[in-house]
Length: 353
Image (spheres, rainbow, N blue to C red):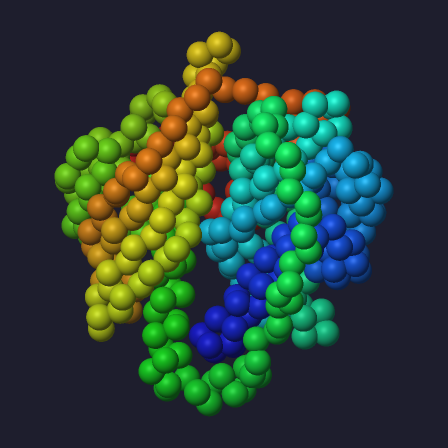
């Protein structure tokens, strides 16, 4: 399949994942089910079950509980790997908000995690065949404000127009070439975030050109030196947190031939310490990146990390604390035990075991 065909399929898959999130927030059971194959399976932390059964169980319990309020799922960092023309694997980040009330006291819960999705094309349409939800971060507090009424979404997604054959005929179009370049750059941004959150230094280094420079955490040095020596998460150092996730949004790309300036926003969620010393931190900032295309490969030539705001608080109740099936939940991990590595390979950088 051509690059354009792959790009269109990637857009369709991203639209499907977004549709699944919106349908969940709308409590629309049939739209949720329609995002899965007929034999689709789902593991949301209570063990693997048929997707339809899981969705219907949620609708019959949590959705019908009058004490539960609205929910919203923000989807980010979608990385798609095609297995063949009819199957793919996607990792996507999510930050979910839930107004909960099943414990008698209404709470506002923020939950950060990832969807690991195996996808299949059925009758020309991409659908989720198997979904595993990984939980990376959570923070729950007693609600202070009245819950706003849940309002269904207005916009309905549409399949991208045009067949793969039509796309191939347009492959010389400058606008399409620009779209391909921007897609490649965006994938590097998401891959760099994945590498940080999994502490995969080899993968992180692959996002830079040789000799790339970085301004980060008070250092101005080469990207390689920062990653392998200076960073708080460098190999051999004890990480200052036990959970870490970077959501990437607002990606603005200014293409200039074989060079591009890219500004992207990030929201970093992390928890560190133990017991009474455990804390939750949120950091908002931006990556100011100069990308270059060398030998056909887009990668970072210079990165400057700007921090705009942050907040650290004592840790509180986790979203999953009261789950009687907590032992079945897939939790994130810095190392090779992370569920992601059931589907993709993990690199080993110099200095790592």
